[in-house]
Every structure is written in C-alpha cells, then in structure tokens.
Image (cartoon, rainbow, N blue to C red; front, side, top):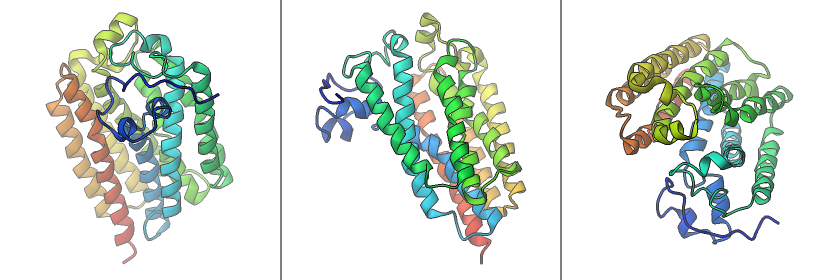
Length: 314
C-alpha cells in the first residue's frame, strides 16, 4: 500500500514553508519530498540539455523555434524521471543518508515512508516517464531506454571513484542527445558535442553542491570531486566551465547557428566565470545558491538558441 505514510517534518536542506509543506495533504508530503518537488532545480538541470538540444535541432532544420510539443514532453519527463531518480538514489543510499546531517531527515531514513512504499512510488514515476518517451520516434525511444544505464550505476559510483559527478553528468546530460533525435530520428556531431559539454558543466555545478557535504562525506567514506579537488576547486571549475563553453560553441557551429546562439553562449560563459570567481568552498549556503544559479545559466543558453532559430527564419 502506497498510503499510510507519516509526516515527521520537512527535510533539513529543503526550501522552508514550500507548497509541499503548506498545501499538500499530510500523507502526500513524504512522497513529494522523496521526489524533491520542493526543489525544482533538479528537474531544471535535467531539462536544460533536452531543451538546448531541441532548440539546436530547430536551428539546423531551419524551423521557426523548437517543437513546443517536444518541449512540453521533455518538461513532464524531466519532472517524472528526476523524481524517480531521487527515489532510486534514496533507496540505494539509505544507510549513508542516515549518517549525514543534511540528509538524515529524508523520507526513507527518517521513517516517513517504507522501502516498499518508496519502490511503488518509483515505479509510478517511471511509468509516467515511459508514457512520455513513447510519444517520440522509435530511435528516440531506444535512446531514452539506453539512458537507464548511467542512471542505474550513478548512485553506486560515490563508493568506488572520486568522480561520481562524471557519472551524474552521463545521466543528467542525456537530454542533449534526445532533443536532436526527436527531430531528426538520428544523432550527429552537434548533439554529441552538446552532450560532452553538458557532462563538463554537470561536473562543475555538482562539485559546488558536493562541497556542502565534504566533511560528512569524509567521515562516511563517500567520494566526490569536491573532496578530490579540495583547495584547487576554483581552477578546476574554470577548466570544466571553459571546456563546457568551448564544446557548446562547437555544437552551435556544427548546427550552423548564427550570432544570437553564440551571444547566449558568451553571456552564459560570464555567468559561469562569476560562479567560479566568487565561490567559497567553505560556505555551504553560498555553495547552494551558486548551484541553484545554474537555472539562470540554462535560460541564458536556451534563449540565445531560440532567438537564433527565430532570426534565421526572417
């Protein structure tokens, strides 16, 4: 039975007085927290490569903007699959989460939901994701199914490698391939460049995020690029974000993009530079704010790509 949960209060690092805690019935709140509905940054970060890819494909195809139906499907799919991924991650990490101050109040270690209830909720979210995926062409459906491989291995990587953020990038940047495939029914070098750039971007922003937990991670033996880079995080961020910017520019070049797309990439590069320069790895609150600011970065690139596709048709 999926109901029968108990609401013992919000998660420690969740947004306070969010609609999840003030509007939802008590039985639904633990599930919303399990899916991180009160923290939309996660599904935005999953969504951006999808929308960038859709806009890049529109430029290459000469369309008047990206396919709005595709954008809507990617939005629904990102929310559902991000929730499913968080649920899966929490099932895998229950013992670790119980030992970390920031995560021990999550629904599973806090006893708000049982593992069986969490598994049922995981399946329900995955079904929604599958229904969304089936709206696309066959190539995109198969490509979407292939994305389950990096999703499945990611939660275990923090136990075996200092680069779990790389594996997060493999999963979270997959949409860079999907948007293009949804339009053309195949891949090309432009979405591949976008995908690799997305991986570099993901390693960068998730390193910032991981600095919130580096002390607890060291105690429980969890590995991360935050612990690996340490005091060299700033130069590492500059390298990662520079690589991401170059690869995004390469993707735009391969898609025959015009000035508006490159203007968006350039303005976005300034935003990433700002993140790297002001970063204080010993200030968890600032790390969280900088991490969340990547939603703004996503909008900058997307608007540039959309404007370019529109300008190209006038």
